[in-house]
Image 1: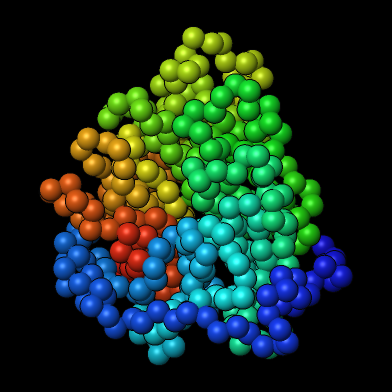
Image 2: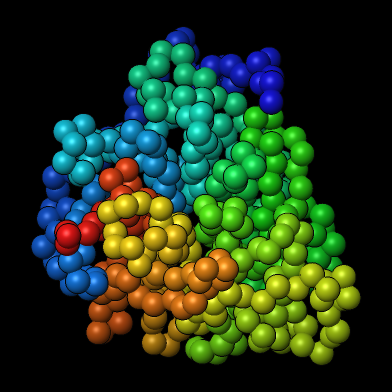
Length: 407
């Protein structure tokens, strides 16, 4: 794809936020703090893991959400505020020495989703914009950093559909080198009058587009309530995603979901199904349209109701035992309105030789104590350069590293 160089300018010119050719000074987050000590001494010893696995604090990063890791080890950390953090380990001890505000001159809004392409471009999926930062690894050191809006402000979704609810976008670069972006719909259950618009625009679904110029936008998955995590199976290229399901139907229904797309353009049940095969109260007396029913794909795994399954990644490293090869690690953020809280843990899902899910089980837990109080709330999982995994926690404002110490 030939790059449209006319649209690529210095970020200061794009946003008219910086004068001259110098970077604006950004915020740096201290790492040797009382909060860090409390996590190391008071929280992490409570986390249970399989034998020979260890967990340690990688970084303090306020409101830490989704993660992107470069081949050199730089970690970008999205948030649901106006910050993206950049964490670097300069001395090679696998603990971040510096966490600083990435692109401080950019006025981000709900900069939750970060993803990195093979050519080193970092994409930031905001509430209603997607930014591309060229050569992100050296961006902070450049006197003329370059960036462009891949999707301009207000064009990711119609402005009429902007909402506080379900506004955290996530992105990943697919095996086809296109960018895939999830668009949670803003309701508990979408009203019928909105369904045609949502099908057309990809709200309540996943879209993909050319990552160079934003063209070729298409909806690749529909019938999704609020997916905040997706990844691609490296063995067959299939798209997998989590989905958070309907509230207000009771503590134990409907289930959350882990889904697999057998092909693009399929429908995953919402809003007729609230999760799994549980019909929503709003649509249970209505026939499902034939065009949807013919494309329906049931979830691979039904998860604990209201546990809030979010970020996920396929494991391709060599550090963990063989049983974890090509398994899915995913984060359960934890329930917000269940009478007895559930979740706040990292799960692992094993696949069979056909690439289908066999089972999901807890891998790391302990952030929810016996009194029902959250000590942390995991959001995303990403593989680090040494084959360990990183886990973000937006309650504690931290990123943890889980590694294998056995032989």
